[in-house]
Length: 189
Image (tube, rainbow, N blue to C red; front, top):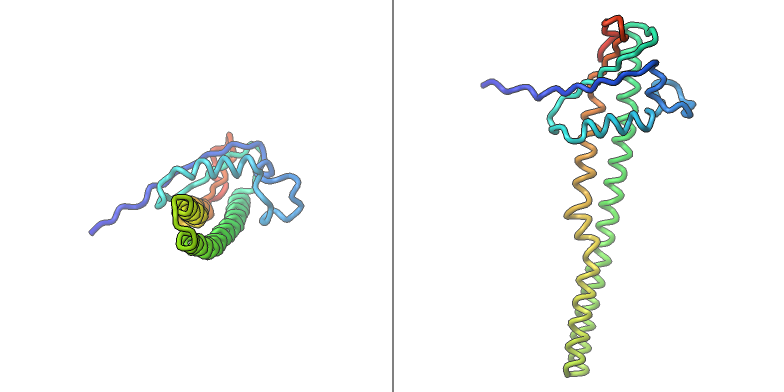
């Protein structure tokens, strides 16, 4: 049985020098520097709609002279480190959201139980039309309190999970540096 290879998608970026890809205000060494925000957004927006099983390839065309293999390896390591860090941030954000969802669920369940109990006690203590309206109002208010945990567990978590998958695809992307004009691949990794 022959299995098809996942598709490879290539993004080509053109820069004057490699330093344009990185945040100029970040004082950390090259491998640990943050990507320039506009570059980062451009790469992520390109990768986001691609199928989850895609292989990614970033080709950086550089005008300034670069060392052949060294530039490609350094840039690949820098991109992989940057997106590894972003994955950890996104995973932390997801964990925090799920913690908030669990806390909201407990609070919501306690509140809805209190509202339903209060509604029944009110109806038993004061029979009549006004007590029925009050009981129904408490029932509605109690269930509205469940809105936030329901939103978290039904809708809010999966876009973060999808984003983590996209960031992982970028993290493991093949990165090549090509010196413009020379037509020579300056290293791929």
